[in-house]
Length: 416
Image (cartoon, rainbow, N blue to C red; front, side):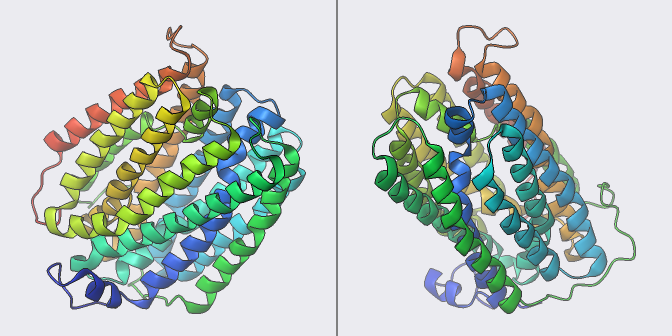
């Protein structure tokens, strides 16, 4: 394992310079991948609704099935990386699968095509995510873990920021202030997304270093046996939180519903990714000092309040404002949660632990998005609330999960 000697009290820039090569390579790969993905996938809900005339129930179904596919692969790939004692090439394979799938959106003329591409892309994400996170965790000591995952999230989100900015430029050049997305514009975006996706795979394949963790002769991929009790409780409250965490596609549709045009929606996403990227590193480092648990709970409560704001919104600029604040939740929780898991499980179980963590999120994504799509259309007796319904539901579960996390998951160590 590559380790650094700098502690939390060392200056932030000195700590950044001491991060190992793997952290920077994985960060660069995620940066390039998100440049590619965010150019197109943020606009898939509008492509489905505006071009293919799909309803919100279909949009929720597509996102839910895609994330469920990813979750199943995350469980297997994480455990497999423990069993093989290797992380790198599974990660490379996952990125490659996603890269190959994206160009097929160019010829999509029915929602079934979009479903196929989304499932293939999420399959690739499922293959790579747990081994990639374990690769980062194996490469750093626990005193720098929050910073390492925070910087990875910062790089990932900086890529998203650039990708959305490029998409906004293309939309401005092709359709200016049009309220709806056109097929022609979407096809240009798909073509432009291919180059950074290919570069991401090349960077990872050439420069990442295998960490060489000990192999496990048998890996109980679906078992929590032997895991820390706090990890099990964390997984329990995570499932509850994620049930209300529907696809961000519904926020994009809500923005259009409240009057934002396509270009304004993309600029809203730019705002979100800028805030997320700028805050991910500092908040990740903060988790090394004040504890991951405290930061994650604060992030979940922030999520609940932001979703309540979405539900109560009346005009487009309010969606824009709350989506910007939504970046604070992501910055506080994404890297911190992964560092928290690394704190709780032994090194030779990290692939499995990340697989279980990502699987829990993915498996709940299907009912979460399906429920959101149906609530939007007035199902389950939520008549009259319309687009506000899924956000009220999500806010309620997030606030409940935050309280349960505080009560059920103890903080036994400074890094917990």
